[in-house]
View 1 (cartoon, rainbow, N blue to C red):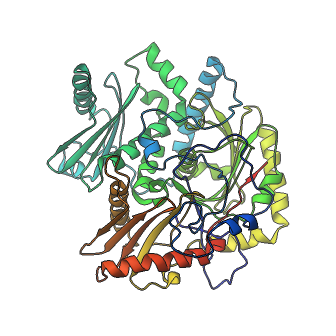
View 2: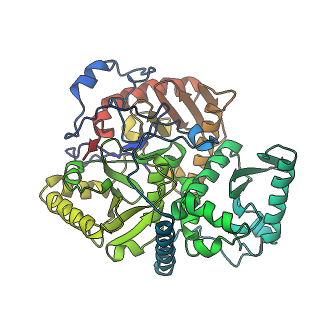
View 3: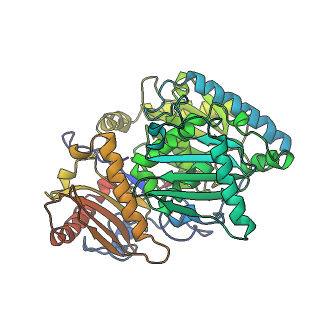
Length: 537
């Protein structure tokens, strides 16, 4: 959730920071873009081209954390991309050739595996829904946020709290509202009543509804509904989903999604508490890319090494780009189940922002039984399990010979850095994203925000700032907000996005001066905070 270092040769007493990779505003990478590879060091030429001054970094390409001419992720608008009606197709070469029969067979395999995962899973988050909760009770009504998924025929598919059967009539009313407005040749987007926001997202053949009693804006809630939609597509593929409802409009999709509800539950949990999903980002320390780069195969498209919810490194095939949403779905798949620790898993997975129409096949395994390090090898060949297993062994052999491996394991024991390192007494927390490099960094949450409730509250405040800064009609450049428990400042330029949380005793003048100090510190520490050169096979 917080950033890491491109170098581990730092004093052990000083927490090695975690780096975060965020998708930035801009266009998809163009053909012919060159990639610097073979080194994790910053490129000297790029350093010369950047402004020498550590502040203010207002121009894209000169801000702290800038430095790479291209990125390993698709360049998209971090917020608007999720809420666009049309799916932006990034430059990619999908190597999958699928038939309808293959899709059906792969789907059966996936559903079976997910059902088995559900039986084996013992580590579902504490926010797992109570299936026995009475939907007519005040306790059910008092939940801060509800999410419902139904088909266009009004069939219930998912609810965050309670059971779908108990809410079938409620979902029928939701579908009636959607249909009534559509009959008038219009689209229902939201309803506001009695302190509740009700947001609708129609993604044929599904309808998703979010109900929130928080300060969350419609656009933030819509962003979360898009994530839930992509989670469902990642399990089935859009081709299979459309085919099912073309054959039978009132099909009960729960039959195919049985056992996978915990994935959606866990994703909603992450959306409430993980700043990476707000900034379209992933935490990313990197010290082992070269070892992973050497373990390659013809059908291998992406090699991903995770530690919990942090991306250690990602190596990709040349000219292939991974969308941050797809990576978050991979995080969610691995983090939602403990069954992957039991051996080497081989499962089909759809990456909906890469290709909604078919499956990749992922080899998932942990490097050591008690380790947090999980390796995911994404292949285009459904019969390539043994080749992927050999790739893993080659990677382990090279990694075991590198001293960086031991240093990395030590650093992961203290994956964050405290905000006190910045040297600004009034500053409690911040989120910083460089737009040109697509990188993000953030310190650990301080003591006042250690509880889950306080983390969610702070994230809600950040979400509120984010929605103001990215309003479609009235976007803001700066926003200062005073509160009883903290003061907040948001500052967005063509070069970076910055969200800061201060003590409530501070002033606006102190907050503005803190921005300059923080940018100087990030510039000074950017070698430790950011990695500027991605690798390809």
